[in-house]
Length: 145
Image 1 (cartoon, rainbow, N blue to C red):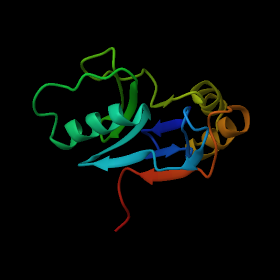
Image 2 (cartoon, helix red, strand yellow; image 1 turned 90 degrees about the horizontal axis):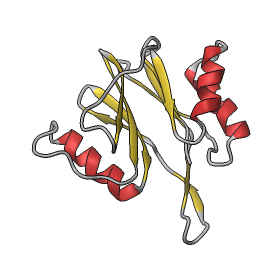
Image 3 (cartoon, rainbow, N blue to C red; image 1 turned 120 degrees about the vertical axis):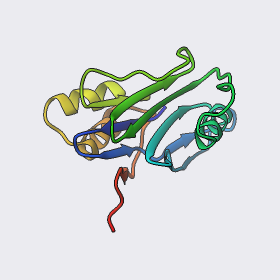
Image 4 (cartoon, rainbow, N blue to C red; image 1 turned 30 degrees about the vertical axis):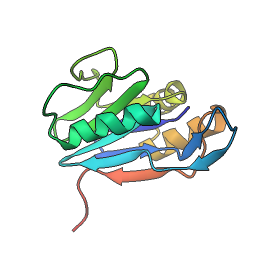
């Protein structure tokens, strides 16, 4: 229930802002992109799994990787885009310089394949994916000085 896009060429990660509680039916805006060292992480899945993984990334991946049931993340760093999920013990990289995750990923990838930038790709996904909603969040890999 999200849309996150990482674009290595543009050095940017974007996401929607919607979080939804299945139990209460309440939705609220939240931040889905976090800077950890020299990387940006855009995380999707269950909040406890996201918190465990972000803590592990912040410890420079020291110790055993936490077990997760519902976790998917994009990592953007100077070397490109990397994918993390619960099925794979290490990250892997897509063939292209961008990737998306979450329920809006197919729409976002299609938009980028047609020439949209990462912001526009998330905006388009928000129009067609019931699990994604603006405003679009943007974080640059290299912060302006």
